[in-house]
Length: 300
Image (cartoon, rainbow, N blue to C red; front, side, top):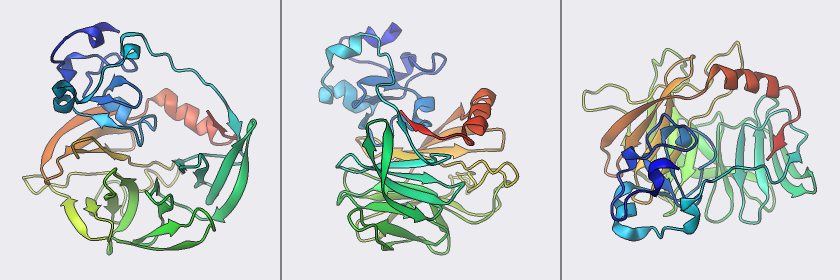
């Protein structure tokens, strides 16, 4: 795996080439997958909810190196499950292994369990959501067309207002951290060009705002991402947020309808640490998505 095997004491992440995206330098170590990952890896759903380790922590010996790291990691499909949804846009996994899946083309949100080669529906709701996350109490937070996040009781399926309100903006992507903070991406209703506000906020468990990210040091907007990239193609796109072991926030930001994007790196103290330009989706992948939307989706 190239430079992943070098260095007995200190590893410079930028010297490590990503296994999945060979032209990209790595920026984090995924302790869950036991591998180095690059900015493009962050834009995918593969590492959502994983324990991501920064270079300083890694080199301080806070990560125990595993033998598996020195052998090539091959991704294989171990199991497939067919759903009755046309699309799977968003997924959240509960502690009991059940899942909540959203099909926004049909405004469907399902709570399912995996049975043999199919999903069994526990609860089906007629609603469109823009973001979803599992709380530490095993309930589900979702964002809708309202300014206040909704909470779903995973036992009863009841939807209630949460304590998280971002009025006058509208919440989109959400992420719950290991220390119970809630990171929310919020926007105005305008799309591209981005003339409205685009903000990332961090809240505590009581819904009190701890930090806000909106402008850089030159007072220019940090983020671009619209709720729907185009109304004609009806391609639903979602911005992802995640954080590392030291609290750095990584925000995937869509720049335009050609799927150019970047990863915005934010510090827990409110500073902007940097930007990493990426191509979020290739033309081939876009064609696959357009084709895949009209067939029964498969969980793998």
